Image (cartoon, rainbow, N blue to C red; front, side):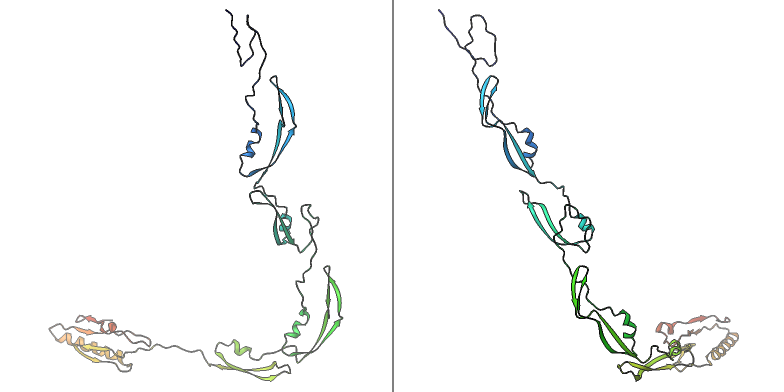
Length: 329
């Protein structure tokens, strides 16, 4: 009996005895695109595919002995990515202290972020040389100051003894070019004439003003100029003959004095003989302690000397206890 078996092998083999090689068959096991070279950009959320172009046309290629046809064998992918590496081409204008007037976004990324910004500046002086990244749009002019310089007439203008007699235009109506801008004025220069009663003022009150014993009481104008300004002012001072003096007095009002328990009110005007009276009482006290066999205590209140002030209740109750035969000083 004879039978035939047919085998399919994955790898090529030699022809064993009794076998016949019928031919080779092919099977496409993988048909994918290798995107590993673009994976870094494809997986970056800040990047977006901008273009996908076939660079290896439609053709048939032999793959391991099998002819395979593909419309495209290789692609080129381009990505647009948003990065934070900002280049400021306007920095020369900022360094020149130019003033930014407007700012607009001229190019936006796929995620809405601004990729390119256009700014307009106004500069007081022209940038020379002008950077290639900066474009000069136009030249504008602004009048920053339009006034009259009165400095030459300031002394006469501020002098109360002078009045303006005439004001005459000496330089025409005309147009002049100021820093590249044509400016028209009815008059470019004036001539002022003043009438003055006197160019200097004197004062006879300086000594009284500097005297600390004198106090100003008032002033009045006794002579006016035609302009209405005061030409002569009279000042009134009040002066003392000597500096004020301060004296200290002892006020003994509302004081109470006690001897042997007998008290009386001494709220009378200050007595200049008070010291003599106290000394006499001390002599009497010593005489008593000499003749008596029994010790006696004398309570004398010490009256402090104060300046124009009324003693407190605590001060009126404070007393000093004296022992017989001793003298309080």
